Every structure is written in C-alpha cells, then in structure tokens.
Image 1: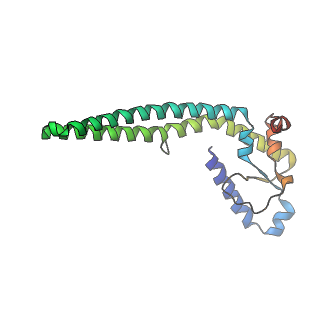
Image 2 (image 1 turned 90 degrees about the vertical axis):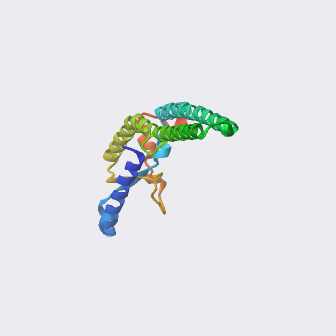
Image 3 (image 1 turned 120 degrees about the vertical axis):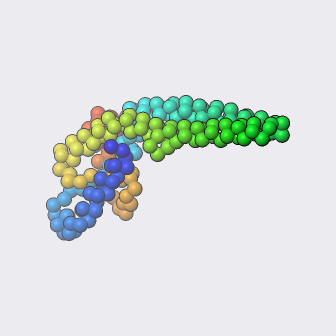
Length: 184
C-alpha cells in the first residue's frame, strides 16, 4: 500500500464522515490524526530504505549518463564526418543514433518512469514499514478508542487541528521508537 493509497483511503473516509450529520458525529465519533512524514522520519528502517533507493537511483543514473555521453560522442563524430559519408552511410548512421536515443529513453522510463523499477523497488521495500505503521495506528486507535485517524501530511487541507489529537508520538511509541530521544 503506497502513500497515495493511504491518502485515497483517508479521503474516502473523510467524505463519509462529512456525510454524517455534525451533531451525530460529535456525539459518537472520536477522531485523531497522525503525520506520516514525521513518523517515517523517526523510523531507522525508513532511512535505510531511502539510502538503498538512493544508491539504486544513482547507479542507474550513472549508467544513463554514460550511455548519453557515448551517444553524444557518436553524434559529434557523425556531424564531423557527415560530408564524407555516402547517402546510404549517412542514413544508416542517423538511424543508428536515433535507435540508440530511443533505447536510452526506454531505459530511462524502465528505471524512473511512473511504473519503473525505482517505483517498484520503493513499493516493495516500503510495504513492510507501511504495514508496521498501520498495525501501530490500529493498536493506538483501538486502545485509545478512536473511530477515525487521518494523515495530516497528506493532500488534505486541515483548516484546524488540535495537538492533543495528534497521535504520531503514540504511534511511534507503539512501534517501539523512543520519541523523546529522537527529538534531542
């Protein structure tokens, strides 16, 4: 489940709550919120995952940069010798350069596109962390009697929020993270 999935579910939940008459909701619903960015930034495993992803991205970017440099060199060489080539040779070399440009773009999309390898790796590596956070949120919500918990770091616009309903530190404690030592 990605952060976007969290936000979509929270958005759907927010719409359902808004549909409940306000008087009824105040009498029976207990609502809290968390800041998932804050929670993630305090989780050591998240930093490790980010480092892994950064190393992967850097390796792939270096590969793409090297391919681009080789392609640029071929193009410069082609331009320098263009007049010496026969029409057939010019056409063949241009096609070769275009094919390599297309290959480079395909590889860039494979690595960094919307459904690319970096996205898939992030999703795979983050899934256990997200499940852990969801379990902790569930534990806090159950033990403290909350009906709904929203993520304030998402795309929601919270016009007002009371700090007393911020459950982020409770979720971190549920995850076994000493909140006080991470602030110092």
